[in-house]
Amino acid sequence: KGKTLFEGMTLTARYFFDAVGARFYGSLTYRQVENIGDIESRPEAKRDIRNEVEGLSPMFSRKKILFLSSENACRSQMACAFMQYYAGDRVEAESAGITPAAHIDPLMEKAMAESGLDVAFRTPRLMEEALSETRPEMIITLGCESDCPNLAGVVVRDWDIPNPTGKPIQEMRTIRDEIEQRVKGLISEL
Image (cartoon, rainbow, N blue to C red; front, side, top):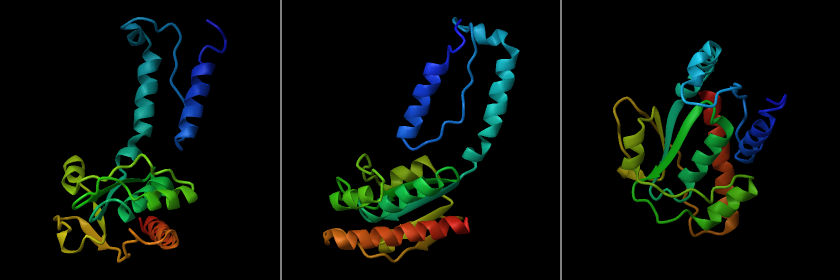
């Protein structure tokens, strides 16, 4: 019944979204909704929900891009992370590999952390798994050579970027910076 009933919840949501690098756009809160069915007696709630869902429609029409490499441990992970960071509101980016490694490259993780992006939670995944979940409109290949798929109606581009795995950290940084610039260039084309 208090004047600031939802303030604590809203602040917690804001802090959470800020911590994960997302935006908080607002909330739908209604007083005296305590039991199953209570919301149905609130005609303004249905209207508000409908309006919010219609406002989300751009999220569902995002361009789908798959970054594909041989092991999905380094280059494709970096490209996906940068795409999600710079254009996650407009592009649904995924990454996968032909024969995924067991873990991401630790030097890649370090180089990306230097750029302010935490990729420690990422794990390499199989191309077939990614393709079973979504059909990309574009595939960007990063060194998977002839093993890369050729899907009808899907634009395929190859970024000829050398594999920095096993090389010194400075080379990883150079590759990271090149991938970041290519991602920014791709975003400007979309």
